[in-house]
Amino acid sequence: MAKILSIETSTGVCSVAYSEDGNIVASKELYQVNSHASNLTVLIEQLFKLDSTPDIKDIDAVAVSSGPGSYTGLRIGVSTAKGICYALNKPLIAIDSMHILTQPVVEQYKATEPQATVFCPLMDARRMEVYTAVFDHELKLIENISAKIVDETTFSDWLSKYQVVFFGNGAEKCKDVITHSNALFIDDCHPLAKHLAPLAESYFAEKKFEDVAYFEPFYLKDFVATTPKKKVL
Image (cartoon, rainbow, N blue to C red):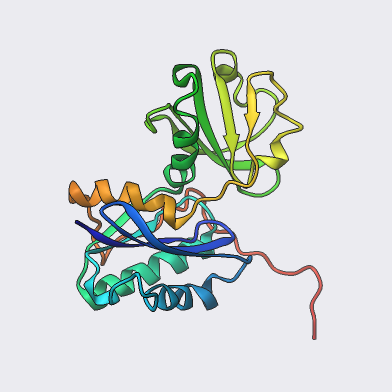
């Protein structure tokens, strides 16, 4: 039975979870933008002070979201996960944020005409661009993860054949653009550590571990630093 600490920081939500054998024992979430740097280690400390969790030294692995998503959030999450792995000599598991975001949605809809439905996470990448992918009812990737600028034709091939379930923090801005009758939008969906846990359990069983020294997040796009238009003295 694997005891796994899961960390998810690919969006504005900072979350951690502790699981045993793929089942969530405890989790903590903070819905506060730009809070990861100051709160991630605090959430982990709070998690392992609960009566239901063991000492952090007794975990078997650390799982983390590998991206795509927020450059800063991913960097903080991965560096924290790697630090814990180094300190405790534990293996590192990395799972992309598209799978983490989609996992609970597939679970919710798999009993309703699964063959006729595909699942399309939309993660905000600023303006009308999103990070996205397409999954089937068994959470198998059927269109690779990519960055797309969304217009009325972006998902037309899928919409012509299937009901497409759209969700994630990029879905809201796409509602007025994607108006096909086969488009279904779900609100308030976030990639969370507690959704990472069952995926991490299967990775642990298959020993799909990362090299702690060399692993880097999957940013998908290069980080572009911006400077403020007005200087404040």
